[in-house]
Each structure stands twice: as structure tokens, then as C-alpha cells.
Image 1 (cartoon, rainbow, N blue to C red):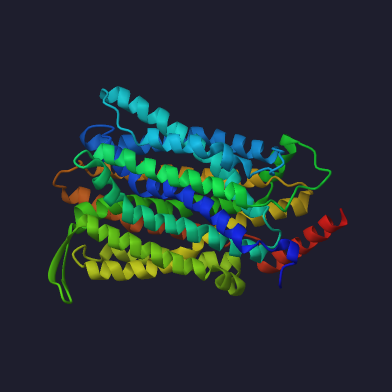
Image 2 (cartoon, one colour):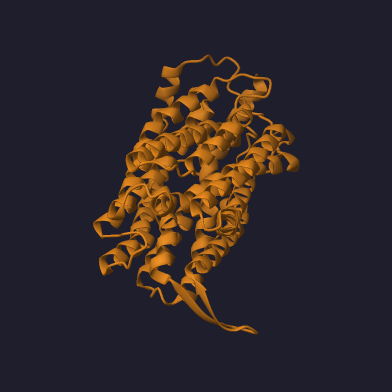
Length: 471
């Protein structure tokens, strides 16, 4: 079905929305791949075997506290009224504080160990608060820029094309920037690198603020009622299922993503390859990881481009089940692959990235569908509150992943920059293979009970559009 003209989003607006995602994800992708490593091996949040566990525990504690912030930001955004809309202004208001928060979090102060730990808690808490302040309203835009379900999926494609492009930039540029800007001082390198990303992120947020428009509003007669919004949320069965899916889904991605740098540094180490015209070459772990991650992200972008086609035939639910299930199986296969066989590791990365690539671009429109379902059922709309739960599940998932990984690394005797024991090696291998695979399969099982199929979504969409035309 071709959406009505009022439901279509102009190309320039899609690009502006995407640039906001580029800015957001320069930070998020940097956190995703390098924050745990930064705290254990650069900031040195604790000594020896305790470093990873202390950092992981901090992530979990801060994210649980941050849950309150997520809900408050969602409530506040849904009640914001400006000439720019409800959600757009937060990118303008939060651009500079978010940049400053990132810079502070990746600054290594010259302090005693206890003071450094306090500094890490304070700055990381501030960073997560500012992430909530910008990201919850920004993601809520997906539910109000258009009322057409398929157009939202296309819009989500742009969102994640720019997000994954940010991933390529981070994966390729971070080692270069850290070395170039910091020289022998790796702590300074990380600080100045995040400053560079922060400046680009600031520009992206401003461009997005100037570009996007909000077209879907709550019912005209809706009055603020926090208790009723809360009741509608916790009785929204599709939303409850999706939150339950998001947590293990994020663990599936996060545990493995945070383990990459350890996997390549301590397990793979070197790649001996005979290249045409160049002869035998030996690549260190940093180069191997960069090739692996960049190749994976480029293939993820290819997978994202296929999202509108996949969802048109399988529906969002069917596409998520197929993609996450395939990714989980491939992840489990890694456990039996010798770490000396880099060629096979790269080949599996092709399949894993193509299968996992579409999932983020499918999941976020599903949250917008939950907002539509709530409006259809209850005649009230609280878009940001719905997305606040998605952001919360995402952040808690990443924090829990770091906590799980940190505890495994401590239990198996991981000590930074040392010769690892067989137990420590197996611990790192598990966090890159079987453990994330298991969480992915849990997500698939929960998805089976998600109730919004394509036929039901079309009925909801048509009825909501009819109601809006009547008013």
C-alpha cells in the first residue's frame, strides 16, 4: 500500500534525521567497543584481576540508577510543548552537554585509586544521563515523523545506515586518532579522540533539529495524566513482550561486542597471510580487529538496506526471529573455530553481519507500533514513554553485559597485559561465542509470543488515520 502524501517523509528530512543518528552513534559506538577496555587497560579503574569486575559492576549500578532518569525524560518529553514540537528541541538543548559529558568520562585524572573510582562513577553517571536526555526524544521521533508503518521502516533504514556508518568511522578512526593525538600517552589519545567525535556529534544534532518535522500528535482532547499513562504502558502486552525481547537481544550483541578487543588481543594475536603482489605479511591484533569490525559493519549496512524488502515479505516479527536466530547459531559456531584460523573467522563474520544487520532497523519501528497500539486501544499516546523503556532496556543490557563479562574475567583469572592462563583464555572465548549465542536464542523464544502481525498492524494504522481525519 502506498502511504498518503501526508505520511511520506521527504528525502532531505530523512538525511537530516540520519545525521542526528550519526552524531549519537559516534558516541554510542565508541562506548560500545572501547569503554570497558578504556576503564580496564587505560584508566585502570582497579588493579590486576579486579579491574574488569569493578568496571562491569560500575556499569550495572549506574544503569540501574539511570532507569529513573529514562522514565523522567520520557514523561517530560511527552509533556513538552514548543513551536518546534515535543521531541526535536532536546537535540538542540542536549547537544553541548552531551559532548562535554563524553569528554569528562574519557578523561583520566591523576588521582589516587579511590578518588579515580569516584570520578569514574560521577562522570559515567553524567554521561548516561545526557545520553537519556538526547536519545529518548530523538528515538521518539521515529513514532511521530509519519503515521505509516512501512514508511517508518524506511525511515529506520536511514537511521541505522547512519548509525552503522558511525560504527565504521569509530572502528577505523579510533586506533589512528588515539595514536596520532596521544602519541605515547594513550590516555590523552582517548580524551582527544572523544573530543573529535563530540564536535561531529554536536553538529549532527543541530542539523537534525533543523531538519525534522513532527506530524503525529496525541489525540486533541488528551489531558496530562501520569497515572493513566503508566497504567496503559504496563498493560500494553506488545510493549511488555518487546521489552522482554530487547534485554536478551542487547546481551546477545553487547557481550560479544565488548569482548572483541580482548578476543583479538589475547586469543587471535597475529594473522599470517600471503597477499598477492605483497608476499607474506603478518598483521597484529589491532589490524585484524579493525578489518574484522569494519568488514562486519559494512555488511551490516548491506543487511540494513534489505530491511524494507525483508519486512514486506516476513513482517517485522518474522524477520526478527529469522535474523536473530541465524546470528545466534553462527555465534555458537565460533566456539569450535581455532583462533589461528583467521580466514574462517572472517568468513563467519560475513554471515553473522548480514544476519544481524537488519535487526536494529526492525526493532525500533516495532516500538513505534507499540505506541500506535496503545493509542488505538486507549485513545491516549505517550510515544517517549514507550521509547524510554527501549533505551532503558538497551542501557541495562549493555551494563549487564559488562558486568557478566567482568565477573567471568575475574573468575577465570584475567589480568591486563599478562600471559593468560588456559582458564582465562576459555573465559574470553565463552564471552565471544556460547554466552551471547544463548541470549540470542532466548530473545527468539520470547519473540514467538509477540502479538502484532502485519494484518493487525494495518488494521490499527487505518483506524488511527481515520480517527485523526475525523478530528
